[in-house]
Length: 248
Image 1 (cartoon, helix red, strand yellow):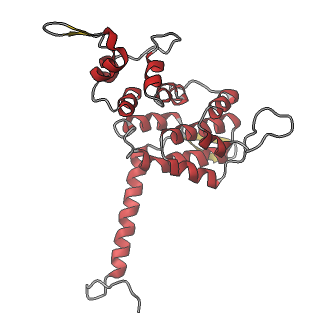
Image 2 (tube, rainbow, N blue to C red):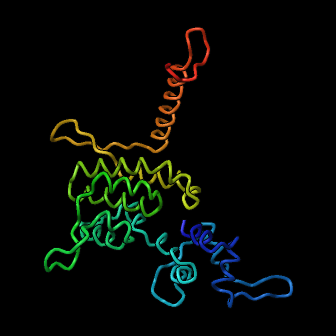
Image 3 (cartoon, rainbow, N blue to C red):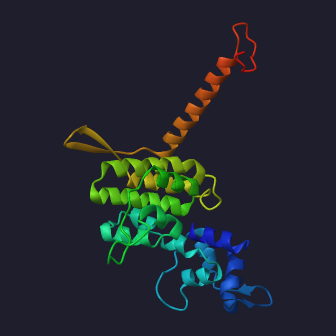
């Protein structure tokens, strides 16, 4: 996904073109061929992942300097969460504070209290949820999953249900974005397995339930078809003709 984001942001057509833009000094044209590192080819194929270590040859930093906004695709906390690394409350809060100002405004109070040096969390309510849904981008997805992780840490059933429903609601829009369109089947499946719904057999018995994105989207599609069929049926007169929908 990171390479795809670099390619989209750069507007360049291939791994070779990106390599020329970022590592052109390492490319040598010979009489019969071209000698080049080809590391960007391996990133494109997914056969190799760059090392994110400090240094002048850090390719994530190189790409970010030339094509701003690409590093977040590599360094996003979503990958740690999908690897099932536990983020405690402080780690989750730190990741939330690193989000864009637009998103932070949905999570934190607008002003500091007294002598406090950091903004407090505010109540995450329906309006905030709606704004995240309207954003419908990678950051909105990451924020939603951070909220699910936060709900797990603080054992909040309400936030857990709210955030997971938002994830389900985001799916249809995310599937159409150019950044996620090639990857959403695998990405959503990984998310579904990591972030499970909670069910309760009794007040003291909780179970985890996996709702796969395919089933949810199929259910939505069926509901839309049924609604369309019902609307059509309501316009058909007993003798089989369509009305214009005007009751007068």
